[in-house]
Length: 607
Image 1 (tube, one colour):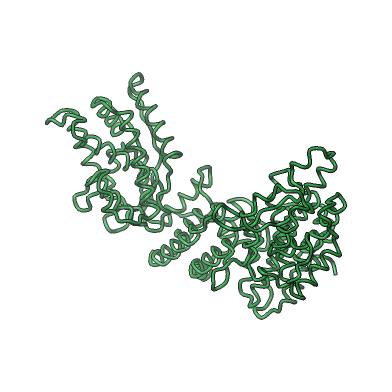
Image 2 (cartoon, rainbow, N blue to C red):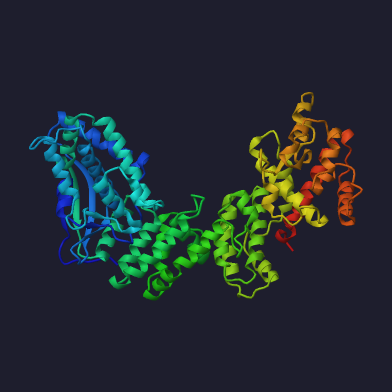
């Protein structure tokens, strides 16, 4: 419902100087997002625009530069809270501090009484200085005010006073200030250039200031403006909507909850997942059971969901809990030990799966759901499934698991999942076989998937045989060997140097999955150039059953290990003295069949 006012908002145009002086003290409310403008992006563009304008003022006097609109709301404590424009106001404030400190550099300008330099230095000082607070702009979130106060009182020096650990906002403020300082040092070296540029910034750059009587009205106006072209994401618009709906007394709890949620999400290392928009979208899909495309659709959904006071209160109370769960899910760490659970998803860098985990987070057999999802994501990747089809299946899967009781058994979770349209793939076995069989070592882009198949196959056989490393997590099998860090390489049984005289068809076969094997530790790299028969002893000593099976069975092998090795060698007979196309093709078939067994492909086939 649009906000209705009895009188129009107070809207006037002010120069930079007038805005800070006549709107003081300016405060960025705690519920605003942190200062996030980047030096090489937003700030550099502003620098270029202002410099182009300043230089053009020489030939075109009377021009002015409009920096945009700011929306302020008096908060009843003789302060004006910034609802819109905090990034621009903060950035311009940093520029003023930088110019002021440039005037203070010994020997840079003549600060004799009544000359232009002292006049403009005093003008800036009057703009940025508030006798009560030291600075006219307060940034309480992440203690940004402390940085502004330090830059005003100490300039760029003695930053140790700020402490060893800076918040993200504090670091962003210092980065932008340093970017301005470098530009000023380079471009405004003379006293004349410094005073002329400062004069133009203070007297010819304008803001439109809009003062609105309360936060809800300001938010309503702000959202209308941003939905009609200005780039705000759905999370920002949702936050603004919430603040426009709650009473003033609820601002505190909402501010704290939103900040904690945002802080939790921003801890996610993968940037594409570490955003509040991705979080609220994932949460929405897990509740709506439909795909949501675009900012408008996402905002419309949440507005409908949060139409009542009761639902808004519930949403606010769950923000931190759900964001913490989302973070753990995004990082694949879902148990008390914080060890990876979603091993395949982590290795394959997936993200489409997250709504299913949120929808099923109430289940006592949640770890089973994680494993099931892990395997279904692996199938999606290696059956070369269309991304659109997989993403359309996810909301339907959410609907099925969300409806399950908390005490649902593993069988019930699997049965419910199979009801989701798209979960079952009748062509799963043939699709995976075709895709993996087509992976070729000569294409570097295939290496990651080849390593994945070898790692999963090797682990599956090791578990069956209770071999040396059978208790290790999947990440162990994927760990790449480094100079001083053990891991495994893909050993090409018949190295590339021996393929020069082969036909193109033979080269395809001798570079397929069947021609590769995991070889533990970089200590053996010097031996990988040998011919197959010469590597028999190397393979026999391998801790991996898959690699051991290329050589004679060790006499010291346990009964269980011997049994598995015999089964592998029977399915894929190997003679390293005669490493031919048939050997490679037979072994490729074995690896693919074992890989399908490891992901329990039968769970995804029609009954």
